[in-house]
Image (cartoon, rainbow over the protein chains, first blue to last red):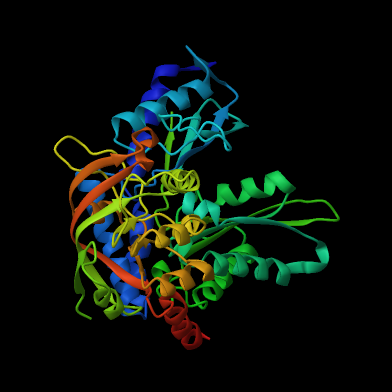
Length: 280
Length: 187
């Protein structure tokens, strides 16, 4: 059985947290550059240009692109032939987050209790999802998920008679309601199917895929493209100041569900779609 | 459009009245940071009949929780947070003389009405451009609620800080107006 040491995970997670916050992915930068060409509002074009400039400053000066350096969310694929030596995987990830945020001048945005609300002072605990897979590799995906867009996300338990129309309407209503609050242009992550909790996870998981990549199944890819068009027709535009770039991309994940159910989750991401990935 | 250069705190009401929804402005002077936790605490102090830690007369509040500064810098990233979370507290602060707010996103109708009734103004800065906006902040001074960390009240000295008028003293709403233009042209 392959061994991976606790300390290696700590060090790599620490780097991952900092890179996510300083270096906006090329997928998002390319989407900005493309949107500058197609945006019909001058103010909208100006916003997009400033977002590119902001990303450049952040990367060059090693300063976070956004002051909301987010909840650290991890999707970890742990190969069943891989053993973590020297400590627990959960502890290693949280220690990496703590060191990454402290040493990287990132903001601590987590409170210990949702009601009494005292800041934990190191951005932990992270939200960690672990999936067991075949093989002996450890794959870690991380996103720094901002609060503004998360607050405007929504889940609804539709029923079969609502159908595809119901699904589309709920997605559009969620984006409309969010308007400028979620920092458009958005990346819209959608989960369809599963049950109450797995539907939300599908939506979150979809946001880890690169912007611009279409779903592997043709029918779902077409639905993604259709939704991109109808969301951009809402007129909300960059920062809600009007325009035809309301979304940079729409991502859908689906799963089997109960005969009585049609759950839909819409997890909005701001334009700072910070997702990083590593394999040990 | 050439941005209007505005000094803050506001010297007199006519400056605020001259600002129209959709105007691009550059703020120069001092503004105060406050977001969720600081607003909650200010509201609690008002409820107890205590004095606020800052005199808000003619002042501007910026809804921001910055990241820590690296050595040699005055502040880290410092972009706006979602304003609607402060809606509940805003009418009380306008009563106390607050004249301007900088944030991002929709305000409630109650707040829009209060802004107009009190002849104040709501600006939006570009959300998610915290690295860029930080370059317009020249000095930072901790003023109150230090225990709140990033959510403490700080005094910022800003120079040509870029934002846009969303809700003006006449009660107009630039989000509504500008989005309507592109919605009709897109359908």
